[in-house]
Length: 70
Image (cartoon, rainbow, N blue to C red; front, side, top):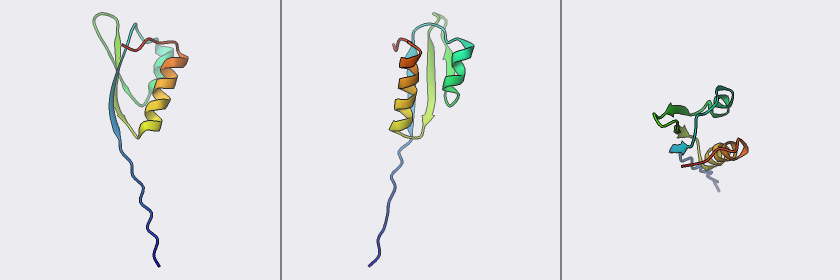
């Protein structure tokens, strides 16, 4: 009998708006995402993440840095 293992990976395209500017020191926490500044001082984190676990990691970093999600 053969056993087949199938791994499902679903990459996630994300866009997360943050209130306020992102300090250069904190930008390294989001190296896997592009940081786009807006004229009003807000920023957008955008890019492709490997899966929901990676997304949760980004959201936890946002939380740990006490940043506001728009």
